[in-house]
Amino acid sequence: MECAAKGNGRRCSGTANRRCDSCGAVSYCSVSHQRSHWSAHKEECGRLKQQMCNVKLLNDFPFTFSRDATYQVCEKVETRCSLLDKLGIHHVGMWIHECSCGDASALLDHLRSDKGWSLSSRLCPCTGPLSILKKQLNSWSDYCEWRGIPLDSPVALLLHWPLTIYQAIQLAFSKDLIPATTDELCIHYLGPERELYQLSVFGELRALFPEVQVHIDFVGPEIPHDRDGETINLCSYPHCIEASCCCKSGKGEFTSRTTSEISSAITIRLHSGYYHDRYVELTKEFLPDIIIAPNAGIAAYKSWS
Image 1 (cartoon, rainbow, N blue to C red):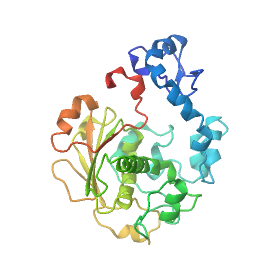
Image 2 (image 1 turned 90 degrees about the vertical axis):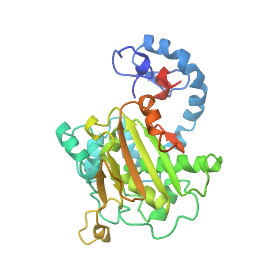
Image 3 (image 1 turned 135 degrees about the vertical axis):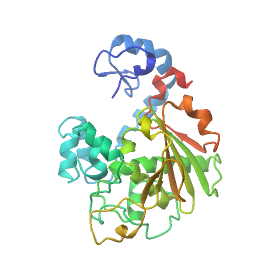
Image 4 (image 1 turned 30 degrees about the vertical axis):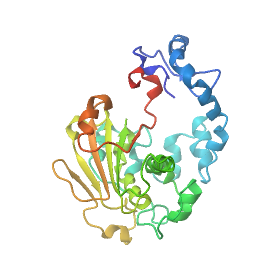
């Protein structure tokens, strides 16, 4: 965890291992940072405490590797690298940025290429769904059953990106914030980091929202300046490792354009910089249906108010 007061303009003094005694949901690097941040944290401390009461439920995943991926990594019994190595996906395909032992230049090269799942077709959703989604997905078990993915598959470690978008949009539908019959969605996705190395995984939104044009604007300082304004069109699902699989039959699956767009179910646009600096420009063409900021530390940055 990072220090919850990180965005307050003062440099952190070390590891954030001092948890809030009340909620236990946020940590600080020092007593001074905890005290200085209390005026901002006190408004959400009670809500976070309620969420922490459900932590066992939130960690109740159905996957066969759940204990290794959560408790053992957190308790340092297992490392992220050894977990990925055990699953046979360490430093390959879209998994290259799931650990911290990669070479920076290799990661930069990876950002410019289309990598697949590096898994067998049995373990990954490399082709379209066998049936149209007729009901809302409410759990990982629902999703895996619908897509025909076994619970020993590690794809959930990456699919949480598009499925978070799916869940947020379903919530907006239920509250009538977005028309449920819409054929076009505009999403502003803030603060992407690892997602930039796993863009192909967002192609899964094609299965979740069939016949809907989904436009996603990725905005954040981690996006390289030389890719600012680039448009990426996802025309297929990420590939498996099997040469004979039908997922290899598509043409022009992952294309990148800076000046023109190709008709696609999922269009991703990259914008380097901070959201408040780019907002006016971004909304000239589309107003967003929803804004998503996963793990963006909004509570720590007073500028968000």
